[in-house]
Image (tube, rainbow, N blue to C red):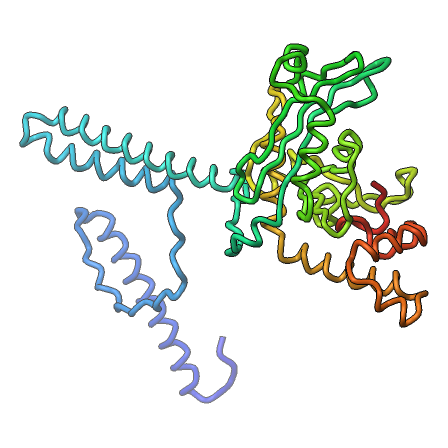
Length: 371
């Protein structure tokens, strides 16, 4: 109800109400007409085309399974499109499947090659030594011996075969040696020596072998592995500065805890078989086969050739160190009378080898390792 107000305000309120009623009635009638009318397609005005933002993100590379699936789908589409026109659709399908098998096999082959490259053990090949003159080659010789056992259990060793090889790997001397004592263990599985070998006409006496080796070693740099054992059975010695023992060269040795062994050594020798395989890629002393002294001497010589530069630098330092030790207690006039390393070696031996061994080592080995 209108309050006692001006007439114009009441009229506008009534007009607005009637207008709302008429709009509601019009909307209801339109809804009824649309429900009763037949269904017709309504065309939606096209939406405003907005240029999409450029996707700067890199697409993910499909996996191998997804690539195979896409290839199969494309091949199937090709075969289905040609099936209505070409009578040999089965042949095309079979050819496509063969091609797929070939591609899969090549992929597998590539993968297997890659895996083999990763897992293949790395073997170092023999590196050719720097050019050495014929005069220098004549200064080197390599030695290896094979022994048999005598006495109870065959623990005492006697010389049964000796081999010497020159710089070029040529055999200079190789002889079977007769054993006077009764042999209790021929050690054939390692030495390859049998009773028939030592009783054959080719075997020489121990004195003949010893004198021949002595002549060949004179004024030579001797190379070998574990030469202490070879010197023991030969009954020979050699100047320490002319020995290159691969069992006593520190870079070839294995570092150990001094408290773990009774001698207190910081390094222990590695087997020649292991060094030859790791450093040279050579296979020697194979399982089930006896050792070859010529082959072992050649392997020790090749090891020395590869590390000759560093080895000789170490030896030259030890020689100079020996001079200072040998001459430290001598007067000036006595020093003038010493001309060769042999004389210095004799002086060191007369003064005691323990001090010398601690300072310079023996034949290139660590100073703390005993023979």
